[in-house]
Amino acid sequence: MSQDELAEHPLARAVKEPPTAWDPQGIDITVPSIARVYDAILGGKDNFPVDRAVAEHLMQLAPRGRQSALYNRALLGRGVRFMAEQGVRQFIDLGSGLPTASNTHQMAQAAAPDARVVYVDNDPIVLAHGRALLAENEHTTVVTADFREPGSVLDHPDLTALINFDEPVGLLLFAVVHHIEDDEDPAGILAAYRERLASGSYLFLSHFVTHGEETRELEKVMLADLGRGRFRTLDEITAFFDGFDLQEPGVVYNPLWRPEEPLPETMTLTERLVAGGLGRRA
Ligand SMILES: C[S@@+](CC[C@H](N)C(=O)[O-])C[C@H]1O[C@@H](n2cnc3c(N)ncnc32)[C@H](O)[C@@H]1O
Picture 1 (cartoon, protein in one colour):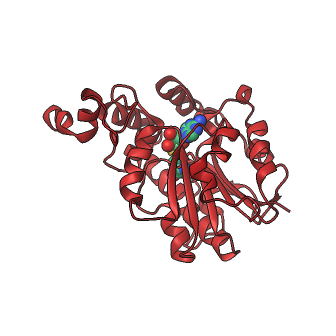
Picture 2 (spheres, rainbow, N blue to C red):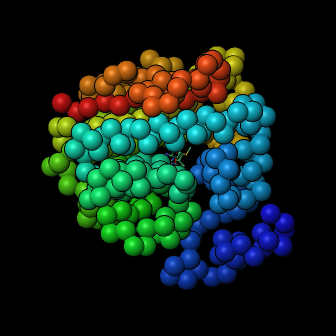
């Protein structure tokens, strides 16, 4: 995008002009955002030069990073369909990111048209784009909140308008827990969500996997450029399912979770970068 096009972009105008009732607020296009960098990696258009610079930096280290992100989105789709087939009709997608090709509500509502979906993200750009996408979908909404504060998410009036905690919920934490550090108590945060979930609910989570030297630079760049990024071992990721019964095949590299397509011939770092799992609350 040229400087002129950038200046004309609705979001660029939004930061220069006084906010109106519908304007996205709090969007700083000079600082990279996790949501926009991920959008850039996926090949989306809702990002700015500062985000693309970080995406390029990461993809110098992981040249097939887009494929890893696509594996992540594909896993999200398989798990949402699985939960819908098990009868789940309400989903909370924490750290949902910018709308992309196949979003949680589209996959859930394709399987079950009455499925309700609440997207939660702390980046206001997600709300700005989500509103446009969801203008006519009464079963879906976007809430701007920080998932590290479970009370402010679970008691948010827009969320409680759609979610009935007496019934099973599909709780998604996709590619987001690696943005919280150990001293922020991820296990305690997850426990707070778990306590509100009825029997038959699911936790569906994906997370960057550490591979020692192979991923050290990536982790450093994420920390330096985005301020957040914590790669964990498969055992550490599995521990996040405390209080849930892990469903087969457990926590595995993304392409290996209940694959619907032929498996990749080799498991390079692209395939091993992110792992996911699904747990059921008894
Ligand atoms: C890498 S993207 C993942 C998007 C989507 N879940 C997926 O897997 O395709 C991570 C998202 O989490 C959001 N995020 C990071 N920290 C968050 C927090 N503390 N509360 C809410 N959202 C957060 C970011 O804004 C970003 O949109």
